[in-house]
Length: 585
Image (cartoon, rainbow, N blue to C red; front, side, top):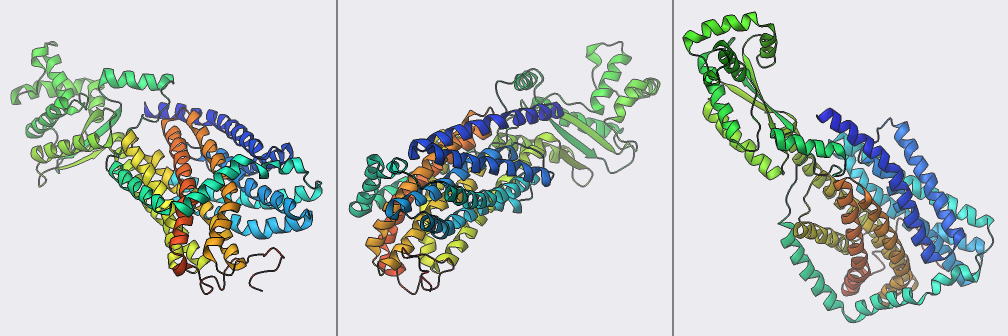
């Protein structure tokens, strides 16, 4: 039954939290060490994200929220999002040390130059999660509140802990800076620069072709309202559910309440015949189980009246009803059973059946077919019929949730567009920043269509989460581009290539960490969590390529219309030049 299933499901979620945390910590730390080749830097990053995870559990406790299938994802999510913060800050610190060797100056520039951009990236990521707060789903709202608070918290922790610890440590040695001279990273950045410089048209054509193919795939996406699709297939309770579904034609209760609009209207022969007619239609529907109602009880009673002969399992005639009513009055058990299917006034009748677990499309067709039959059997002017039950509630809830999440994604795009407008004071810059981040979402949606991954509450989360995170790379790139524009006297090409060379390495590092970090969710036994991890990972990989190739290409193509001193004249975030002076001073 559903209460038992929910209890076992919840316990399984709690059991997986420690597995997620350990996997996320091990994978992200291993990748971090592979890139930086420094135990010290790796240890500092681990300490930072572990404190962030402890804070996440603390916020859940302070807000009196329970651990659900969504809030259970927050602690590992903090690790996956926190490590890129550490990468940007530590990478910048080491770049500065390599350039001039002054520790105090390096730490100051980490906070002033990277801190502002990192603040914006974390705010946009938090905004992506915060949009869930505006949905009417308690589950999503709680997830949005805690996730957005934790993301801002991990930024503050990173910005405070990393510079403070490094201020007490000796200046990094040459071997700690070896990763900055890695040839394969340089080769990758050179490749992106060459592509942008020489193959801009090819980038646009490829993007357009991929966009068209993805849009075609989007139209093949189906919506899934399956109750058990995401449940762990290896668990015994899932096998029990499948057994009951196959043996007893359904597990999800569907209730039909018929209001006869008159007292004792249910006991009338005409009403019983109509109820029997509707039950016959339910029996003929393969997705529904044999129903139970007052009709079944009356038929069983008639059969009992004639000694249990199966031939008499039918509605009684007018004359037979006199004897049967006496039999019902004398049988306390049957009378009590009847009270479960008829109210005390005799005005309302209840029919209970069970529906097989199926996709939303098929469920909607079954419901529509059932409503058509109800309209035909029970005229609206004489009867009022209500359909409810777990089956319909889950189906309606899925559609309702999807609509809410589409609104939250739209809100995230609008919110981040406003951030861009505030940062750059340019409508064209909003377009330039959004296109490279919306394209990966469309590609992922197309992949879902081609691979048969349905839209459901767990997979629709992908788009808001991935969009909020992928915009981070855009902000880092544009922030550096803006610095270079001012330093290079508004020469766009030189500024774009300089920004690409400096931010390309960090963008590559963070994207790889995020890719493998979210991939840890694929070890879950819950289908929805697996799909979420795989799809977010894929989307972020597409976003990295889009931000490294499409974004600089667009900046170069629109250079005359977007790069001018008036656009960047009074910026809300101060930029520190290499000499340490504020650009607005």
